[in-house]
Image 1 (cartoon, rainbow, N blue to C red):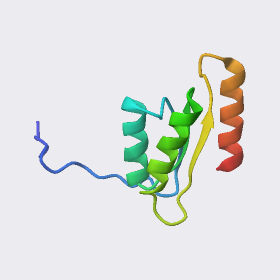
Image 2 (image 1 turned 135 degrees about the vertical axis):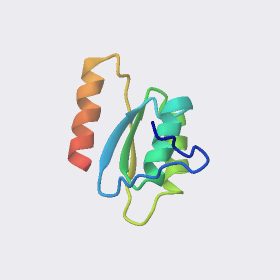
Image 3 (image 1 turned 90 degrees about the vertical axis):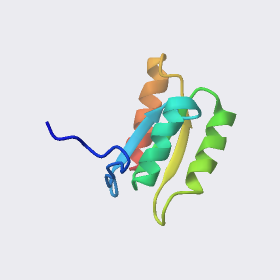
Length: 94
């Protein structure tokens, strides 16, 4: 088995792609969102706390490239009505 050089991470381009990321205002979700933005993706952030979500959106928008979209939609993914709304908003945006 060939070993991968862990000192040099693999870099993927997500330019032209879009993603809906849940739990995106802190922790793992925010880390995933950051990686997606760095890779060029348009993203829709989703989390329950609207204030923290907007802070995360601003932080990520600051590192986004030209034409790259960083959007946010508060939602509780344990509620099917919220899930339907955020999915509809994401499809409409992208």
